[in-house]
Amino acid sequence: MCMSDGGAAKANKAAAKLSQQQFQWQKDQAAAAKADADGKRAAMSEGLSKINSQFSGFDDPYYKGLQDNYLAYANPQIEQSQLHAQTGLRSALANKGKLHSSTDAAQQGELATTYGGIYRDAQSKALDYSNQQRGQVQMAKQNSIAQMYGSESPDVGLQSASGAVGALQTGPAFEPISALLGQAAKYASMDYNNALYSPNGQSYGAFSPLFNRQSPASGGGGGNQVSTIH
Image (cartoon, rainbow, N blue to C red; front, side, top):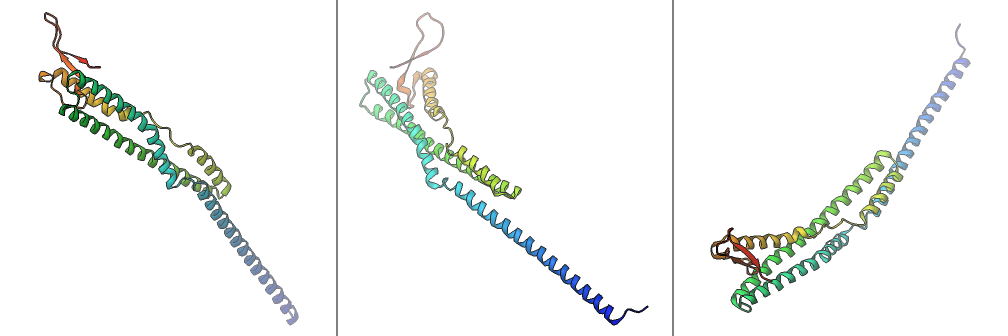
C-alpha cells in the first residue's frame, strides 16, 4: 500500500523536526561544555594569580634581609673570637718583648688575614642560606600549583600555598658558627704542632706567638712540651 503524499509530507516534517532538535541539543551541549571549560580556565587563572600573590612576599628584599640577618647573627661572634685572639696575641708578644715590633705587625697581619677569610666565609654562608630558602620557596609554590591543576580545584592549591607560606615565613634556622671559626682553630692547631715538632720550635703562623716549646726536664722521659702563653 503506497503512502499518500500527505503522509509522506508529515513524515518528512517530523524527521526534519527531530533532526533540528538533535542539532540544537548537540549545539547546547557544546555550548555548555565550552562554558564549563571557560569557567574552569578562569577559575584556574584566578587561582594561579592568588597563589602567586601568597608567595609575593618572597622577593629580592626578603632574600637580602635573610642574608643580613645571618651576618647580624654571625659577625658579632666572629668579632668576639677575633678580639680574644688579638688579646692573646698581644699578651704573648709582650711576654717575648716583641710588642710594637715588626714581628708584632707581621703576626697581627696574619691574624687579620685569617679572620678576613672567616668574614668572607660568613658572607658566602649568608648567600647559601638565601639561595636555599629561594629554592624551598620555589618548590613549595610549584607544588601548590601542581595540586591545584591536578585536583582542578583552586581551593586545594590555595590551601597548600597558605600552609607552605606560613611554614616558610620563619626562615631557615641558622647553624652555630663553630664551623666558620673552625678555620681559626685549624690554624691555631697547626701553629701548636709546629711549636711542638718543628726544628727549634719555629713557627710563623697567626697564632704561633701563643705557644712556647719546652724541652723535657733533665732525666725525665717524654718528648718536647708546649706551654700556652696567657
